[in-house]
Length: 310
Image 1: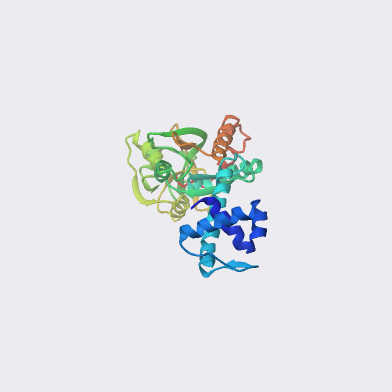
Image 2 (image 1 turned 90 degrees about the vertical axis):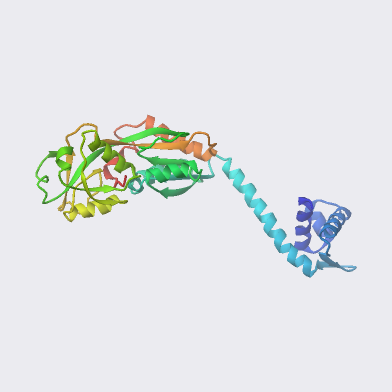
């Protein structure tokens, strides 16, 4: 069975007239008749009922026509998808990112990119850093935007921007009256942390670990805003990036006196994976913004309003 035979049958099924179908296909009527006869011979059934003046689908032809419509429709859809995938101004880019970046940073980046290439589509996931890397290795996403704290073979990484880390304490904590606090002081209080696998947990563990400290973790979660709620309830302290506090009368943010209390947000991708032109364009856009980043850049601006989750 040849692909053209299906196209010939579809045209004939639509008009149910050999002459008009042949004209639609730019074929001679005898050539169309031979094509349909060959198709019927291969299938072993009569697809058409013919008389001297008319032609109509047999019950087998009606049944087969439904399948042919689906087959040809899927083929056209596949062609369209391939053409879009090869078009840098179209296609789909799949990214995974920290939940913290979903309130401001990622929407701002996507909005600015789509202003340049409005026909590009995005598929978005929010994950822990470990899950992002898993998705990259499984080729489920094109990029991860995260604080990359776990190296993996075959994954490339480019820094985008940095965020300062702060201490968050309850209003009635003895630490709340201080202008700044040390890691040593934080380790002496009940500590609220994210689960292992989140980059913010890795960063926190490393900050304490380099001083030989081990905080008393009383809660492990996945959402920074839940951590802020627990702090507001007086249940512990935490180390987080700059986050919006909906209860400033209950949570106090303090500067950490220890050096290098920062996290770097960057872009990760699978090195041997061939990216679509749209994905290549998005990567070039992000790296170009990084290179042009200033105090007034659209990448650095969201840092002051991001809620973080690690």
